[in-house]
Image 1 (cartoon, helix red, strand yellow):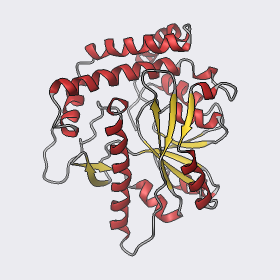
Image 2 (image 1 turned 180 degrees about the vertical axis):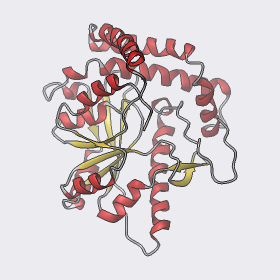
Image 3 (image 1 turned 30 degrees about the vertical axis):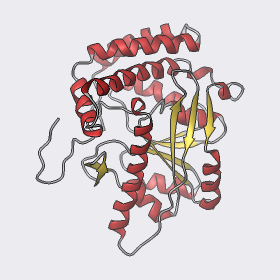
Length: 306
């Protein structure tokens, strides 16, 4: 769990954030999104600590690209984040009456098939910090399909409380990341959909290939799927150009089979999930969070490079 900051610093930080979000909320959504993109581009110029991390990651992922091309992906990522912030300020305005103006489905038949084959055992939703990942579960719940999300508290408790309030506004549930395995098993037995982001570095997991380099990845999703029979359904939020329109892009589900060599199966399925995330990043590289130290944990004997 991220270490929380002190109350004074949290209040100062929260006050600054609310001043920006209030200005964006006062604008019509499309204008706010354009302003957010400009704000994101400006933020890139000042985010000196994170830019080297992002450029190192882009070098790992796209060694064939020129430095200028990688820098352009990074610039687009910051602009994308600005749009996400602007959309967040308007998320309370979304309802069943207007959600289709902002979010629709692409590949809904894959979800319908996974639900049918699940036969009441629940569904594990494979996703990542990709596109407007906060809008994905909110929009899904507005459509009437409630999700449970694994949640790691943010460092600022005031920001965390505001984010959590929006996440559960339309019936979603939050599962504490720490010791959440039992709760996830229980909710799968109740036929819930549980969303897990599988694109973060972990200290304890399995090493799988990610853009040609070993990346330590949580094996929890594979273990849950093997143990319960719940299908793993990849779902990602894809923005249409620079607009306010998104598609919840749902890919065919992955069905785990129980084998005698459980550990080999866990690694195999974790690799398949990671391949799916890489596939989506390659399609829209500006959608992913490049400043995360994804390759921080190294195999035994390898030196860290961040």
